[in-house]
Amino acid sequence: MERREFIRAGAIAAAGFTILPSGSLFAKSGGKVRLGYIGVGARGMSHIAEGLLRDDVEIVAICDIQERSLKRCREYIAKKGKPAAVEYTGGLDAYKKLLDRKDIDAVIIATPWQFHHPQSIDAMKAGKYVGCEVIAGLTVDEHWDIVHTSEKTGIPYMTLENVCYRRDVMAALNMSRQGLFGELLHVEGGYQHNLRGVLFNGPDGVTFGPDATSEAQWRTQFNIDRDGDLYPTHGAGPCMHYIDINAGNRFTSLSSFSSKAKGLAAYVEEKAPGNKNAKINYKEGDIVQTMINCANGETVLLTHDTHLPRPYSLGFRVQGTKGLWMDVNQSIYIDHKSKEDDSWDPAQQWFEKYDHPLWKKYEKFAEGAGHGGMDWFVFNAFVESVKQKKQTPIDVYDSMTMSVIAPLSTKSIKEGNAVQEFPDFTKGKWKERKNTFALDDSGF
Image 1 (cartoon, helix red, strand yellow):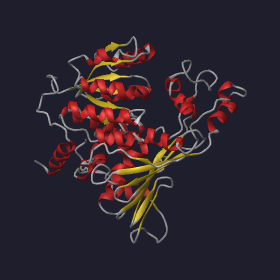
Image 2 (image 1 turned 90 degrees about the horizontal axis):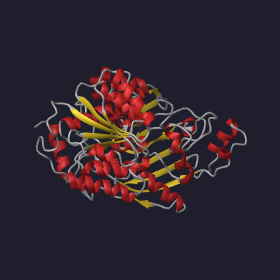
Image 3 (image 1 turned 90 degrees about the vertical axis):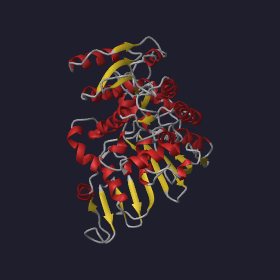
């Protein structure tokens, strides 16, 4: 057994999962992973596109409650010359008929957030690997439900957090593992992205709800009803890998802070003066920041900023005793190695030298894939795990840890920025678990 496989096997055993014998999860499939898709809207279609490019994937069935989404998916599959998928629709429970099929090995869930928890639970109970878009659930209890179900069934669950595979993020991970930054002290990340055009659309550009399209049908309402870090995983996922969370380290507590909410109302008023949607009380603060403490003494700062005019940036910062990477100014400084004392080096110079082996090996496969190629990597990681009947590289414990920040931050703000104790989904196993994420170029 190779060293990497030994570490991975040990991590799975420490997590308490049963390592099932080959073939115990799946019927004969001719070497192909047979996928079912629950939700084929905008994000689901991205995963459909990835699946159609692979010879080792068969898209068996698709499910959506909207006929227009099914029609678009049906036509796209036909355009690519692939066999038609069986379709399920007709109500919120239609996905259960898809899960009843015996010829599906795994499901991709890309539905609105409020459906992720029940659909994931039902999929694992049906014996299907789960690849679920963020976030996992709306409450802390829902996150625990997913952990308990995965443990009880032995079925892996993977949050499809693509930013964990972003090229610069992985290069910085490679640098960190080689000691370039020294001992890490502080990391930052977040979701800093102008989403106003996503939260509102329609003929007037300021519509949301049933009369809107795509995410504006459901996502905007969360910004009315809640105040917290609604989308923490883009920042939290990579930060967890840098500081070995759930693998010798863990998050212990967090506290969140929210600014006043002015951006969305101002946006609506500018585009459609006097529109009723400009008078809504949007609870979600325009800037939400969450500070997290760790068992080993590091701090983590996450920022959610989606209501204001701004360029896209996830705001990564990885800082240790010897240097740091700052995503915002695309710069790196390494003590005694940078060209000048107290002056930044262009980050790209370092990233070219320390490009992660995974990207070096699979760059050509990722060309043209969504979000700069990282969509290919996260989809590939999930498919390879299913195909090889192994634990997913982002397992249920890591998935729940990065996602549960959402309800915890909401509770913190509601309670006047009160400190929230962080749940230990591993139940103490984090002390023995090892960080197995992207140790080499194996692809998953």
